[in-house]
Length: 637
Image 1 (cartoon, rainbow, N blue to C red):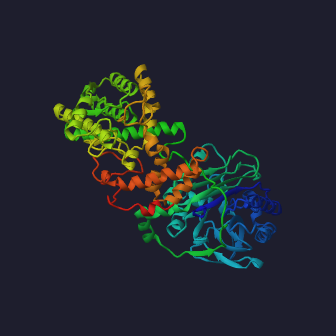
Image 2: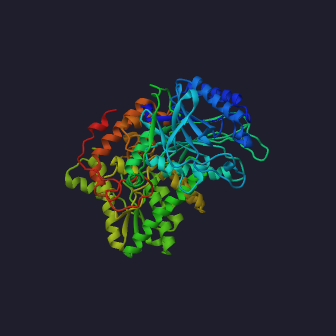
Image 3: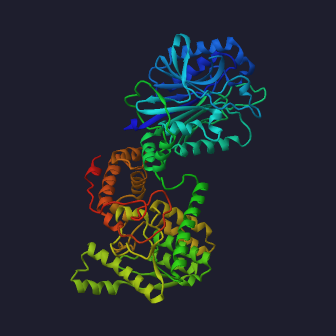
């Protein structure tokens, strides 16, 4: 299973300017250091065999001969356990000198990729020493190392994974070679660089690398020259970054004055899924296909322990607080814009919302208030209704009432107890029997009240159910399952909690903020079963269907990448290590798969609602699935 991941290492050894022997030793030392982790690819910086800052010494045959000798040592001594190593060096070919990347595998040179774009502006003078890559592929004679391919159209294959190469400035041009390489099969791009440090450049570089990996739907391994390069006019601190489809997986501390590296496992299965799923990628391939030579390496490590990448247990929630606040605001704006359009299109000036004191209804109410304020409507047009039933606790009821008062909306209370008891008598149900009929009768009575009040007030019912509940089918069909606009339909439960917390920071009223924070701390429950002896919530959703952290994780990787249950299980083991044991993860993954398939019929007739992220279950949008599909294949893990 771990061979679905491609282990890449970016290295910046300490260099000694013009001392090929010392630099070769430094490269071999870093290779030996990383061999035990069984990498598939190790990338070193531009001109790492000589140092990038040799200037006019590049035209010295002494340096060039030494560089070729250093390459010979690398070929002879490169660890056999590493399938592909790429180093930078100058090479003389056909009357000109080229800035090259050389690919090595287990005792031989696979090929040489010359640099295409040579900067000759500001501090760079590369055209003084080197020639740019020509348009035609060819070969280069490396003496005792043999004659090998010499081309910018080379790909290097490691057990079916193709690696393309570009060098430093190649990335910064209008159409980088990596675009063409990706369209011709490269799933990993290696960049050998020598980028000096100036103010603001690193932040720009990080953006450039992540965006290029996203544009090419590839893994991107960047290694830049570091400590030891000449500081006559410039400073090179070394930069090691590994990106995957818009995300930075690993980066080194560039301020360390010693050799440094970054290591990460790139998810090949995810990249292949996205290239298939993004149909325009194939369109670009057809329009830009060109001949590419492929040089195959040996096989990868048969197995390796561990997974060298962060697997976020909350994939829907940004990890750092600054990005989380921005993400929350963006989601709320999307929800608000969707609701504003629906109110404007219908001419409706009244919303009816069932307020339970739980997370979902609280978020729907807060978004409704945002929408009314944006449209300049009186908040009294929002009718919040608490509907106490057999499981309602004082805690949730009080929070609901306090919140509505703080927000200045219309508050009503309509008990469902008498109506439901009458219904039990009508259908002959024993109220002491706390089964699905007992629960769903309450949910449908609440929906009937909301619909009827909406008719009475000339308004529409705002749905409160979230994306996680839709995935699990945790809604009463034609009960809370139904509304006239489902504002939370694209928001998973793990994110709902953060959105409500974000609103709490905005609410000036002390009691309202206190109520919001208590809503965040309240266990998730439909409150359809009587409270315990102390009046606390007895029916906790996560005790019944499993932790929403797990279900949102399963949902993300199943819908976003189409991963198999076995692969989702592997990722969950990594993400939740120390929080959930393997048996717990397996149990709830089975529950998720079973419920996801069995409950599709509810998703096939969902009310309208806004998409806010990359995963959604709207039958009119991203997800189309037969209601009677079998889950059998998905239960095999």
